[in-house]
Image (cartoon, rainbow, N blue to C red; front, top):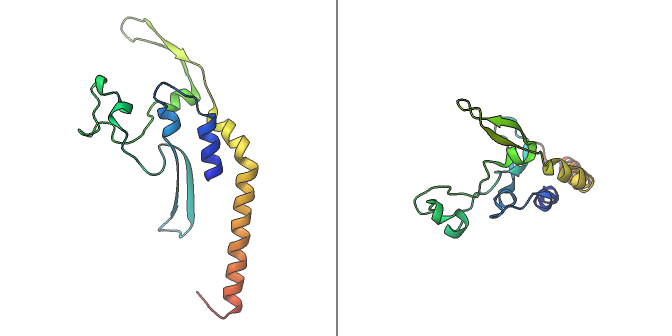
Length: 141
């Protein structure tokens, strides 16, 4: 997970406040119903941190103390990654513009794929060996 998150941060486009890059995180949790471990890596995933006032843009009226944008988040990241078609106002028909796609998530996945799966294989093999050791010692679940 860490390898993939680092690759995503490296491939992420850097804006003025670097919010897309800062919002990339990771989370590992155990599913209560199935008992399986789930890993997530991506934008707006993982531990939420309070940004400093200067990172929010206090001049724009966003204040961390008041609870506005209380975490590093990037609600526009899907527009950056996937892009948009040409958009227009409904009433006036005036062009709002379009945004070209920047598939930084896909690039990061392709770059980090081999080391990530190598790590996964290592941990699965360790888990199997650990369970075999426990079974040999007579411990039953």
